[in-house]
Structure formats: C-alpha cells, structure tokens
Image 1: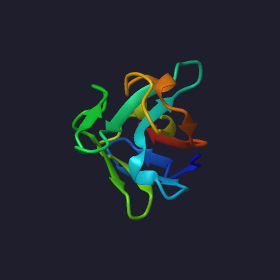
Image 2 (image 1 turned 90 degrees about the horizontal axis):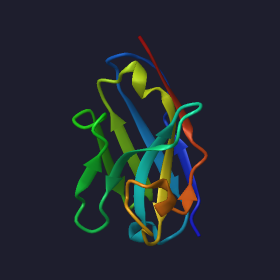
Image 3 (image 1 turned 180 degrees about the horizontal axis):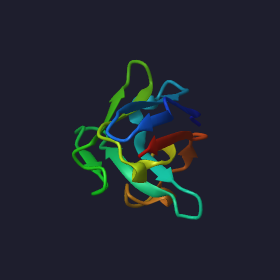
Image 4 (image 1 turned 120 degrees about the horizontal axis):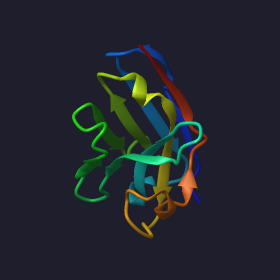
Length: 125
C-alpha cells in the first residue's frame, strides 16, 4: 500500500514554470512504477509523463515533450514534474500515479492502482 500526496500547483502566466511534487508514504517507493496524468473537466484523465523504474528512461506525451521533465528522488520518496514554458492548454488537475507492477501500458490510467488527490495548475494567457 502506498499513499500519494501532490503539491506545487498554482496559478502562473503563460511562459512561466511550476514544479509539482508527489510525496509517497512507505519504504518501498523505489520499487514502484510512477507517472503523471492530468485531467480537465469533461475529459478523460490523460497521460503526461512516465519514468521507467530501473533505467530512468523517460516518456512524455507529445503535447509536453521538450517542456516538462519527470524525475524522482528515492531518498525522499518524491516524484517531480518540472513544467516549463507553460501554455493555457496545460491548465488541468495533475495527478501522480503509482503501481507495484504495471498491468498494461504506462500510458493507460488503468495500469496504475494508486493515485494522489491531485493538484490544480492554472495557466493564464
């Protein structure tokens, strides 16, 4: 069992930056597969970024590639999402997700079984 708590969201102007954090409980954080998703009202929760467990290879949605960076610190049980050059279309509630073992593609929300409560990111034009 793991509990996830996101923080770092807020209101920022277009072109600005934010860094989201996701702190996990438990002593086996380093063994969990983790990613970031986002959701806007009336839309499905969509994949944003994923950090492969052992190789640290990263994967991103095309819409954020080159602007967002996912990273993790196993010493502090924290997953990060650095978001640069933010656009109004990045406005959403951002969620971190975790799984002891991915049941499917890292891009699919159904592959993860632990979720945080979400943190709101609003980008003004």
